[in-house]
Length: 181
Image (cartoon, rainbow, N blue to C red; front, top):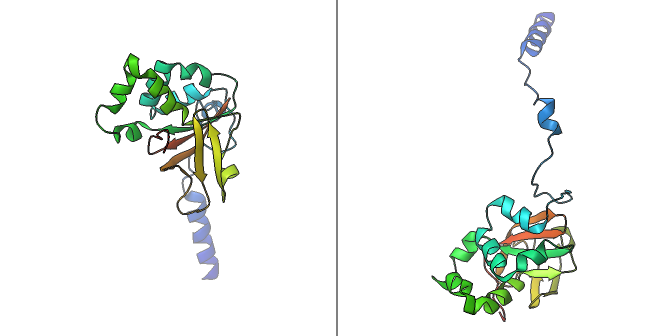
């Protein structure tokens, strides 16, 4: 009886279909975009943000004030990037008003609140800490002291951390940061 059970188990095991492995070509293709910590990329911050599809409003605004050129530079930069959903939470017409040529200085000031120059701050660098970082337009409170709440910058929560680029890192945030707040 014991031999019969062992034989039946062996037949079931060896008769089970094997799962197909992905083709070798697929494994050899480089990833165009990776959000994992420690990844390497040749993509600059602007192109990394564009590849996600989540930052179209931010990229349009950055282009309007010429900040996109700086973010294609050497860096390193840490960018706390408001998503399109974050911009949608602003009062109706605010972004459109800021995009008007006569308000570009205000738009530039707003965008510069999201950029730290000279540092590539990964989530692992922030864990368990509270600090104030200097953005291109003033201080930014960063709080990563509570593992449950995650990383918070001023009044915004980080929704997707560590989007690496060749010249820095992007952390997607759920709220647009305002100067002086």
